[in-house]
Length: 208
Image 1 (cartoon, rainbow, N blue to C red):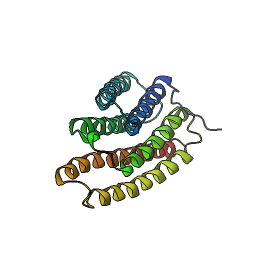
Image 2 (image 1 turned 180 degrees about the vertical axis):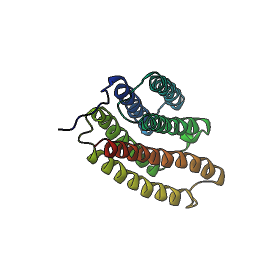
Image 3 (image 1 turned 90 degrees about the horizontal axis):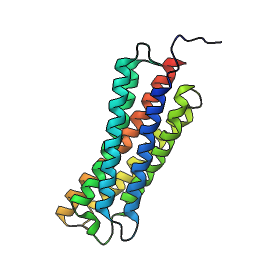
Image 4 (image 1 turned 45 degrees about the vertical axis):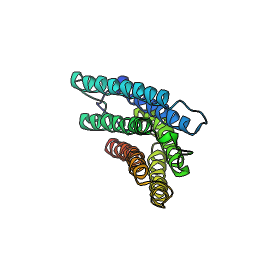
């Protein structure tokens, strides 16, 4: 039987879980963009609110690291995981803001591949939110990082198809430039989810 001198400090796991739940809220808001007659400004503003909440969670996490003598696992890993979760939220907020500020939702329709990328992100967000509470026991996490990495590969394929669509001549040059920036943020969010999963894998291996 393994014995550890590390405490099972619940506050860290709670903060990770709350941060991941905000990512689910973020992807759900992006999914609203597929609805007819959606209020894009409202979606953008609510994404900003969620992002601000995530910033506060990250700030609380850093304060907790600095005020805790012995952490549940390496404080560098705690810092990195919190920072990466915050990075995902930043990308999600950027997508909503760019779509609104660039007026892209005034197009007859957004590319189907853009919505497909948001769906990949939504799956990654839900997986991540389900996995964070399991950090406390370090059990049943392998399926999470394997599936999250597989979804990142799916996201790469959709991203490439989105680029093909953008450069097919269907859109004018200015719209292509704007949409490419949105596509890059979506792809960066997919990558950021994979970085979270890889960090969880590193932590689990260290603690096993």
